[in-house]
Length: 599
Image 1 (cartoon, rainbow, N blue to C red):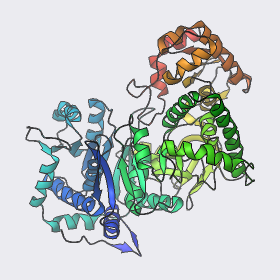
Image 2 (image 1 turned 180 degrees about the vertical axis):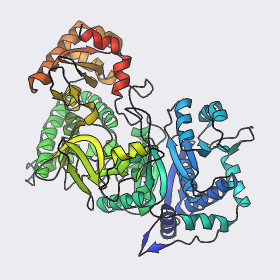
Image 3 (image 1 turned 45 degrees about the vertical axis):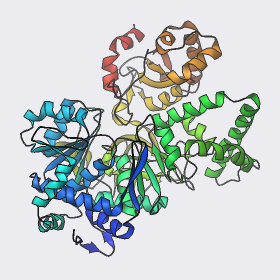
Image 4 (image 1 turned 90 degrees about the vertical axis):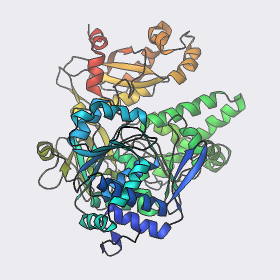
C-alpha cells in the first residue's frame, strides 16, 4: 500500500494513526507484538502491524462503518485486539472495549449505547453472547470472529475482513485519515460501573498521544524494549502501558498466555516496565512467601536479615539518606536472585494503580529491593494523574502530578485535576458530564486525598464510599481495610457501618496461605469453608483485629466481624475486572451476614 500522508505540527504526530505511521517508518522490522502459538513465540513487526491495521480499516469500511460509528471488541489480550482497535480508528470509527467476563446483557448495553456497527469477538465462546443479543442491536451490521470461522453470513472471519479491503479504494481510506483531528474522539472507555451503570468516557487523539508521550519520556521506554499485556484491555491503565506507550516509542508488547501463566511468561519476557493491580501484587507476595517457607533455617535467617536491610534501604532512598552499609551485600545475595526468579531483573519500574494497595504489601516488596511505584488516575484523565519514579517516590503515596497538569484538593477533600489528559466528557450523557467536569476545566475525581509538604498525593478514600455512622462520624473504610488485609491469611476486607452505631467487617481468607497459618496456631482448618467455622482460627483473628483496633480512633474500631467461606471475585460479581470492590453488590449479597453482625 502507498505511504499514508499525515499532517504534523513540528515533529509530533497529531492522531494515533499518524503515530503508527511514524513508528512503523522508524522501526519497520523490529518486533511490535509477540504472542504464543502452540508454545512458540511468534512475532508481528511494526511494518506488518501498520499494514494489517490499514487493511482491516478498509475492510471495516466495506462492512459499512462510517465516520463516528461505534465498534466494540470482546476478547482477551492478543494482537488482533490491538489491530481491531486501531483499524476502527483509522476507518473513522469509535472503538469501545468490553470486559471479557461481561454477560450478554452487559455486552448489549455497551454495544447499544455506542451504536456499534461492527462487533469483534475473539472466539466461539464470545460469539455466542453476541448471537444471543444481535436481534436487539438493529444498528449492528456485522460480527468479526477474530479466531476461527462460522457459517452465519453476518459473521466474518478475520481473513474475510482483510479480503474485504479490496472493495474499498485506498483513496477512500485516505479521506477518512485526513478527517481525523487531534481533539476529535478517538475511543470510548466504559467505566467498570462500581456505583451504577457504566459511562462511556470520550478520549481524544490528543489525550492519548499526550499521555503516551509523558509516559515514554518519564520512564525512558526505548525502541525494542518490552512490556507484557495481561490485564483487561478495556481498562485505560492497561491501554496506556501495553497499547499506547509502546506505539509511541516503538517498544514491543508481549501477550501473556493467561493470568495463570503470568509468572512463567514474566520470566520469559523480563519486561522493562511492569504494571499490576494490587490483587496481582498480593498473589505474587503469597507465592514468594510460600516459596520462602520451604527454605532451611539458615536461608530463612539470611532472608530475614536481607529484608531488614531492604526495608531500611528503601526508606533511606526516599529520604535521600545513605543506605545501610550491608545493603549491597543483601542485594547481591538475595534481592537480585528474587528479581530474576520473578522475571523483574530488567524492570526499571514496577507499578500499581486502579485500586487501593495495602501498606503491608508495599513494604513486603520494598524489603526485597523492589519498590512498587504507585500511580493515581482514572479513565476520565486517560489513565495517570500522578506518577512515581525510582528516584522520586514515597511508599504509601500515589506520586506527584504529571508536569503540565494541575492538581488541587477541594474544601471537602475531593481531588480535582486539570490538563491535556482530561477527557472532554461522557458519550451521550450531558448530565454526568456537567456533574463531573466543571466550567473551569476541573475534573472532579470523586476521590478524597491530601498533598503532603513534598508534593506527593495520598488517597484516603472514595467520596461516595465514606461511611457516616449514626453518631455522625465520617469514616474512610479503605485505610482500615488495608490494615485488616495485613493480617496473615486475610485476603480481602470490607468495612460496614453506614448509618450504624458501630463498624463491622466482612473478611475473606487466602486459600494459598490458609493451611500454613492454620498449622502455626494449631487449627485443623485446611480449606475456606472449615476455616470460616473454626473456633481456634476465630480467636486468632480476633486477637489480630484487636491489634488493628489499637491504632484506630475509637469510632473507627471494628466491633464485630465475620469470616466468609469464599473469596470476593469477578465471577461472583463482588469485584470489577480491575479488582475493585463493588460495595453495593457486596452489601446486597451478604445482607444476612451483615444483619447478624448487628443483631
